[in-house]
Length: 529
Image 1: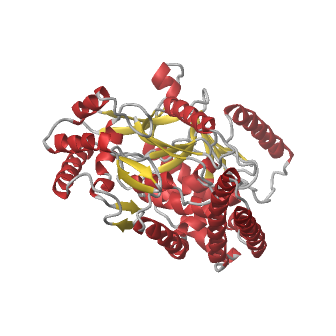
Image 2 (image 1 turned 30 degrees about the horizontal axis):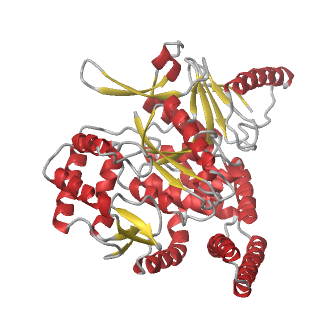
């Protein structure tokens, strides 16, 4: 099973809690279908996706560094972020931790120029994030220095009063007991079962703790009075429930157990997962492995329908050769000088559309309106004696202030982006870095597949590769069957009509149009467009 977490979010009070429940339901169903093991759930309620200023989102990114999960499942990719800049930055951070974002309802969320632009931004992620992160960190640091709780699930033993974490006496003794038991060597499962008997459940799920959620609770530095957000740390920001010696002993035990578990596992990445499908039945091809008589471990891609239900006759395919072959074909048929020119034109146009002064001015107009609305509400509060009106104004002001912060951050990001102007030559130079890569290097394979591959349909005697297409959706099995028939017919007609000595150049695969590549058993292309 592949470890995964779910991230869910809804934007405002106009959306109901059912929105979260629906997202979770679809994400869990997707996880069950695809063989993911859900170990945690992160939820941000009534928070916009235009900003990365989301407590559980940031906690999730921070937790990714622990390398306990390999995938983040979202209902749709816009739940992760609606801002291309943030998408590039955080996907870059997560990839460094070996974590990939997948959608329960989509496969590709954008046009091909946008996919490649995001990869360009990702390559510049550290430059982009340097200035912007400082502003956000300052705001969080100031809030935490005041002792304010910045959000997320409230740990057992605490409650929130007046934006501050205070001790909840009825449960504080329980968390002290938990730390003491674990420090004394009591098994985690035994402690979790005892908590369930006492009616103490995970504050996020309302259900008994899972092992990972339990470990996360023991990791919380709030229990020693420390608040953290990203790399911002504030000591004595809330009342401590656990003494430092006990807390440190528990951390040492958790680290020792994690290392012992990691030694038993050798993580193998299947970089075609989510884009590779069985040509016989259209089902996902999933990672598989087996040990030969000599004791050597071998890795494959196997049809999920055959592996789980014995419902298909597709043979398993060797992982390394298939990944190498897909990357080799991409370099040969896609990353050619002519096509790189076309790609560069499209990416520059996309960049100018995404980051331009017109968008900044539009956001500035929206920001000015929000500021005027806040001022009007404050004036209304000064002129009224009605508590009901004042409370309503306070709620609207709070919502508008969130919008104000989001707009200020978006404007700052666009201004930073406008300081870098990607030219056609820049994009071509970046694309050329792919042509010099090592086909046996896993990072290089991943980059090629993430950026250029839409979907692959694998038969026993041929492979059909689709590259990123204009409407941004993944090619379905039925569409693949139809298109390969049409391509074969067009190819035969073209050959019949062409003069025998024709030297006209082959148009090859159209990167941004409708395209596929089919090869026979000897790996020779038999049709392409």
